[in-house]
Image (tube, rainbow, N blue to C red):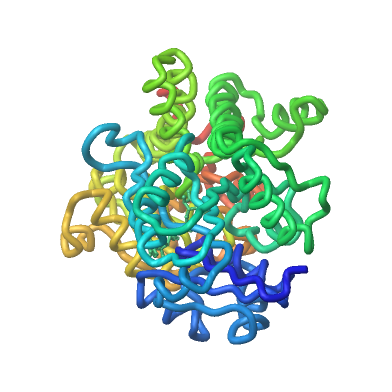
Length: 472
Ligand code: NAI
């Protein structure tokens, strides 16, 4: 049924790359071209070292590349040849102008849409894969029909994959959501896209709806997920003040089938390119609709997340006898979560920025994040130049190197390898008393205490040896 179908995806990033690779694997009769304006990103997709790390991605790309999956910088050609065009460009939070700090910046989207309008010669189905504010499909449709010379059907098809598990999420999604117009050509476009997914996703998991519901669902899904993290993190502060254990509370609460056990892990705070941006986008939407109280309700999720990162740094400072100035701190993990090299909005960035502000000496180790990325993130966050940042920050090739001579270890990302380090050996090279601040609750705290460490873990009964005179 799909033979001869040609798909183009504009944007070869964390979403465009994995989603199209999975589609190519599952639909061998469809030819898929992913295009991007970034020459270096496309070159990397065509090389042995892909531009993003995602478990299982390498294998799928290598199986399909050059057969029915192509990576190219020829954006116009990709558009011209395609029947269906996915747009998976970035939609960051606006930095300047109206809605700065909250609204989505749709510049990249509009540029892509204008490109489609100017080169498309035959009817196209244009699919919003990026996360966008509600009403974007309508605005994009206006751009396409105003500037284009053919018919366009705009669909909303938000992506629900999570980085780190993208390939399994794409292989076996909880649901695929497709929003379209209710007219005849809109319905036909929805059916065409649904047929592609039906190649591997059971029909009952392919939901079709109107575009506004589809666009709003993505923002709401991310806001709810983030809200759970902020809720359990708020509880972690109560636990520390009361002597309760956040994991025990989460277990008891999560076994209620109405609540469920997922996303109840207390931590140093959520990161990633999406949660904060999408909540702020929802907040902006509420504000522009005059729903100030609803906006405030969702905004508190982001505020709680910021507070959680600050709470963690405060625990470190108070724990280390009220100052970290000149003290070496080993920061383990820089990615926003395990199994990805992505650092966007990572809690590590803010922790590091605060430690630099306190004039600590920070030694960072992450198994996947590139050095250049860390320097870029830290110069942007601190507004210092690289040489200035390097006065306070050193990058290390292993956790052991980072910990050597350190007063404290801080776990900022839950990488599996941090669970199996030889903490006895590590302690031999650390300043005494040696501290561990476990921002992900992944270590065996009792075993560490037996080794002589003073341990702080999020939402756990406080170590009597830790300075806890101030409630954080
Ligand atoms: P990304 O920044 O990794 O990739 C976007 C790509 O689009 C970049 O390579 C950029 O060069 C390219 N691009 C921008 N403008 C272009 C244009 N006019 N023509 C051609 N290429 C262009 O972004 P990512 O993470 O893939 O996110 C894309 C969208 O998907 C965002 O809206 C995001 O909110 C959404 N999303 C992201 C998820 C994630 O886990 N990263 C999950 C679900 C949705």
